[in-house]
Structures are given as structure tokens and as C-alpha cells.
Image (tube, rainbow, N blue to C red; front, side, top):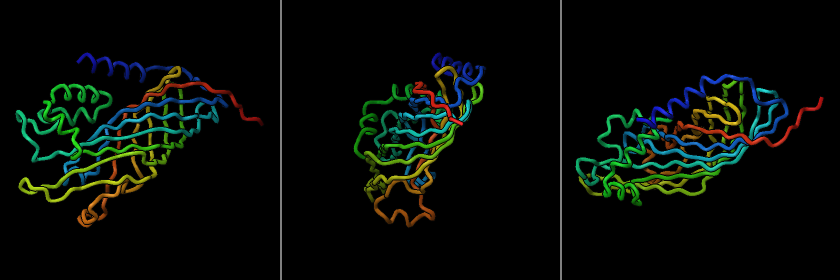
Length: 265
């Protein structure tokens, strides 16, 4: 409970902070941006295959050039990934628990509140029996994807308020995924995934104060499919077929001044 109060208090202090813009026209700033949040799979996969919301994480470096004291353009490079598991109705039942967050009536609420959901992950992991932990880390019923990310965007800052929007190019680094469909306990089909490069978008809203900022980042792909799904017949059941993720993350921004390059008239 104390962790929740402290984290919520930090957000309130930042959101109520005042002050004028800390930047001037021509400033060149490097932003280091770690993020942590939740990745939500497409509803098709939640309802039909039991794919659960997973952990979204990333680290970017973005160079911002200020066209004015409040508007900047940026380009960067980063690493991002997401990890999910599948609810398996045929998993062993240990003390009435079949799933990582089973038995927690507040699990979905935690996932939707940033940054409070971080505490839910920590608290839930403490309650996992060893057998369940082994199942989660097994080679099946999980999905992992990681990418090189190239962001390009524009950012607006006024007083302590900050708003950003942009696009991302995402190039697969490594990933794995496998789940199984079962009928009466017998394996019907093994589903696997091959990552694809894709173009995505992001939207930030938050606060920026004295070389440090925090923001809520919403992001997703323009593409319907961010991975090839095997076997191919699975696509026949849907029109259109989708395999992608919507993410909601807490972003931290640390500024490093690089240079002043004012526009010459």
C-alpha cells in the first residue's frame, strides 16, 4: 500500500508543477526514455486462444531539436519488446490456481492503471507456486517479441505540460511463441509465430520539469499482422485476420543537453 501511495503522490506533484519552458530555439537535447507497461493482444486472441495481456518494456534514445522554445522534432533508436502467456484450461490445478493472476479480483484493474499495475505484478509473483512458475517459463504457451525501433516524431511543451506524437519503424531482433489447442486434453494443433517488421505509431501525454519528465505512452501498429501465424488455416476463421498489440506504458524521460544550434536568418 505504501508503494502505491508514494507512486501516486509523485505523479500528483509532477502534474501540479508549474514553471516556464526550460528550452530555447536551437537547443539540441538527447532524451533517454525507459518505459514499462502493458501490451494488450487483439480481441480475437483473447477470446479464442486465451492470450493474456503481457508486459511491454523498452529503452529509447531520441535526439530533439527545438524549432521554437516549445516545439521540437526528434529521431532516435531503441529496443522494445513484449512478453505474454496463454491461459491453458488443461494446465495443472495447484491449490485452485491455474494462472498467474488467478484469484486476484483486482488484476484487470491493476493492468489498466499506470503506474499502480507495477505493484500488482510484484505482489502476484510473490504468490506463484513453483509449479506455476515452471509452466510460465516453459517453451509452450508463451509469446515473446523484441525489436529495434526507429522513432520519428514531434513534441510540444508548454510550462510543465508535454505532448508528443510520431511513427516508429520496428525491425525484429528475436522472438519465440508457441501455444497448443486442445480437445478433451489431447493436442489438436500447435500454433507458432514468425515476427514481421512493421510501421507503428505512438502518442505521449505527460509532464516535463527540470531535465526530467514522465508520460503516458499509447502505441500500436498500422499493420493488422505483426507476425506470421502458423498453421495458415487459422486465418480462414476471421475476416479480417489480426495479430497485433495495443500498448499502454509509463515513460520516464531524462534530458542530456548536447548543443545550441540556433536557426540563422
